[in-house]
Length: 227
Image (cartoon, rainbow, N blue to C red; front, side, top):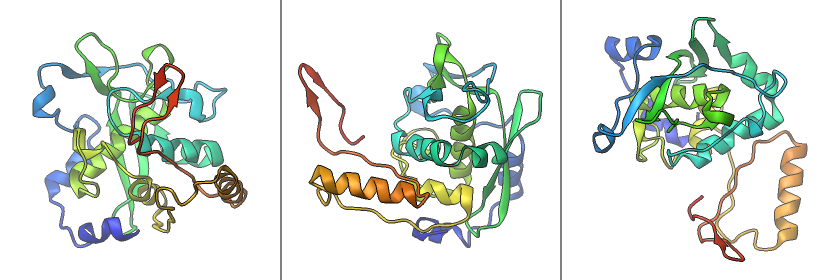
């Protein structure tokens, strides 16, 4: 599964933890600093709004700082949309079973319902689709929150520590494989180098995420950093 999972391999989870993962009605606790402005709210879920197939354009990041996690999920959707559909089972009653792997690479099913983090005005805090809707990646994000609540793979911030979540820690949860490769910041300084790496990785069917550590400026606009 990779080095991120080493500490969790021998973790003995309790019966309560197992019940938490299997019970769609149990949610990750809201952080203390957001107990007054965040709530779990029921949303109608349209899993695949893009002609019935997962697509990276289906949703955008909202208030959670989990951009890298969403990037690897969208990379799956771009490269292997049928795989995403194969691991999400819609029970037809507003609940979903997600097929994943525990830190020992054993099959694991995590169940979630259609209650997602939102503000007091009903706006999704979780990743959201057009017109404040919940889609496949909203469901996946919640399943990973529950996974990390129990196994504590990623020690970030936010609900179940998903903020700052890296793709190298997330993809193995879905595949049972932990192989990955990264380039250090500045290693691909030439645009031609970056283009070559992306083309070769895509041709090999690899998942790709990238980021930047300083603000990017375009005219009067400036991006966030660490994104």
